[in-house]
View 1 (spheres, helix red, strand yellow):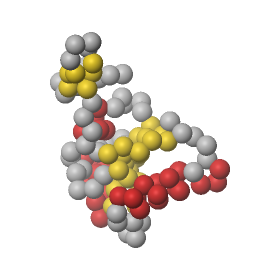
View 2: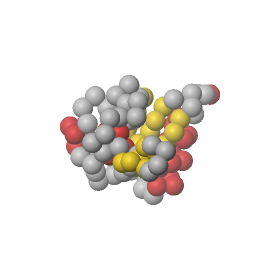
View 3: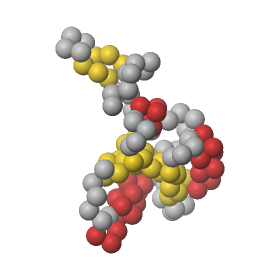
Length: 104
């Protein structure tokens, strides 16, 4: 499954990216002027630049969907925000995964 993390203005604040397993197929989708900063801050992660005409989040989601499914592509995909928090349920309470072992 291809994961897209939609981001803007947070090259160093990639909470979602750092919570995912290293083997996950992740692409960061960012505005062109921010691409170099994202590449420097997140080495080894593919950075995809959105066209300048794509400004609003709904336009960005539509653009990513159209780009992903071009030419009959059928690989599943998922779009995520860049600031997600993940929690574990231990049967009694939710536990934040920060400073905890990764889920995978």
